[in-house]
Length: 70
Ligand SMILES: [Zn+2]
Image 1: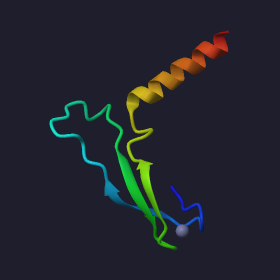
Image 2 (image 1 turned 120 degrees about the vertical axis):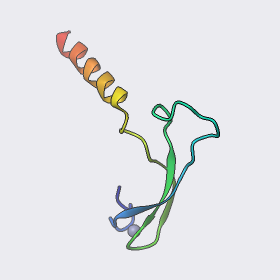
Image 3 (image 1 turned 90 degrees about the horizontal axis):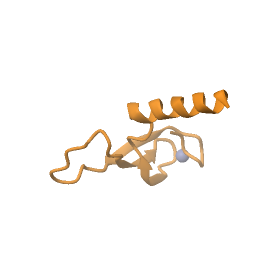
Image 4 (image 1 turned 30 degrees about the vertical axis):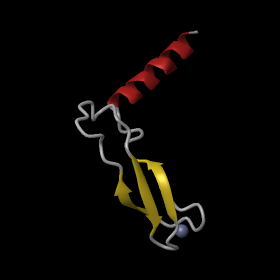
């Protein structure tokens, strides 16, 4: 992720914690706050676990195959 203002590198400064007693941590998508290392801009509630899930990638591939068969 890069800063929208100056294209600087964004550093994760805070990560959402899983809810207490939560079991399905693979399916849970956490948010994080990030700060630009260059200008100090802070972006709150950015996706942290987005795109890391194996299931999401698999689902995308299936959708593409179906589309090309039609
Ligand atoms: Zn910046």
